[in-house]
Amino acid sequence: TIATEEALRDKWNSFAEPFATNLTRATTEAAFSLASNLHLDSPSVSSLLEIGAGSGHGSDLLHRFNPSAHLTITDLAEDFLNIAKRNLKDKTNITFQLAGAESLPFADQTFDRYVANYVLHLVTDPSRQLREAHRVLKPGGMAGFSIWGRKEFSPQMTIIDDAFEEIGIKGTERSSFHLGDDKKLRVMAEEAGFRKAICWYQPVVYDNYTAEDYLKRMLTPPGRQKILSTLSSEKIKQLEQFVSEQVNKRLEAG
Image (cartoon, rainbow, N blue to C red; front, side, top):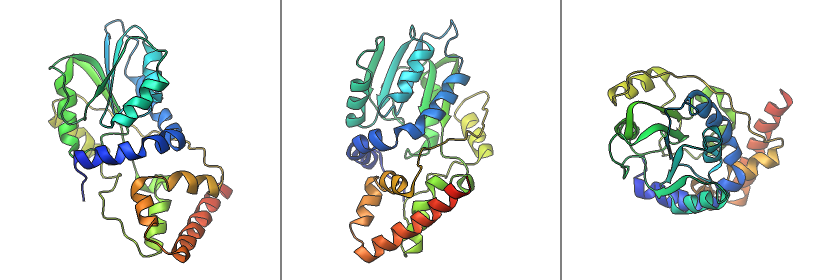
């Protein structure tokens, strides 16, 4: 199933604080990679737009690359936007706007740069987000997106789902890896109006150094918590044992 925008808003509002505490660090490497490749420090760049800013850690990076450019920070979830305001309270030249990626409250050709870090694969209609990105960019502007890439190279993001399947529970939500085909992404970007699309794979190191750390962080999403609430103590024990074995095997392999 594919979540509606309303369902996504409710999910991220309920998950904002746990995500900011446990998972934000996993997003900063991709944010830095995007910021490094968008020529943010170009003299022609005076306006930046960030979509799905979350807790604002990526926003801080964007601001550091070009403090003189006005940065507009958006998020679908008000709770996330409030966390970003808190984390960026000492920064200047920033505007905060509650907005969803698929229907932006901005005029055509408003921004020089557009950044969406780990958002495109989550929205209801990724093609619509791409069209909106192209619409609000000025001629000659640039957009950067990061997504979940190749499932086979992302064990940290697949172990929990594998564990649920191991105990007989299959997920019904659309996979977060559904855009992990660079050829498909290029076609989607060009159909949205972009002149050229460049894709690369970005390794991300996530500091889960023990199975206990991994379980604590990766079981925090609301959907997983909802599943756990339906399981017997024996099933939960089986799940935790499977996860621990998989995590330890990868940690031992280096």
